[in-house]
Amino acid sequence: MKTLNLIFRFYKSFCLATLLPSAFLLYSASPDVLKVFGLAFKFKILSLILVLALVYQYKRSQFYYYRNLGLSRNVILVSVFMLDMMIFLTGAALLAKSNEH
Image (cartoon, rainbow, N blue to C red; front, side):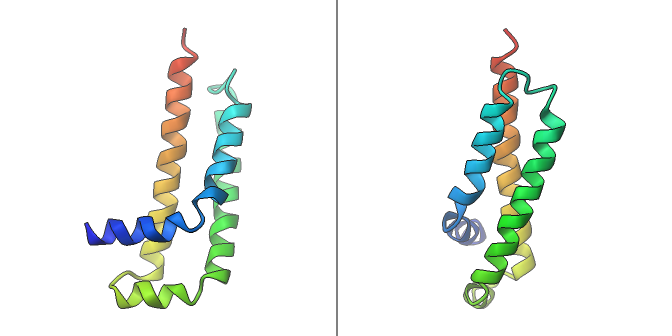
């Protein structure tokens, strides 16, 4: 539980930068989400990698704080990547389900 709390604390500091591209991609793909999902998924991965690279550069000193609490830099970055992708895929699945009608 402590680990999840620390990961959410780290993610909270830049979640807007990752959620805005997700919302834009899902909104722009909403009529044909299944047809353009592959392209939207690729753009999402690219934007997330760019945001995480910037976070890695500008929040480098914060990684020492999390390391002292028992989380390595790789665990944090991979966990944030997986969390953000789950949010994106859940949104895409809900959008696809709502467009089935």
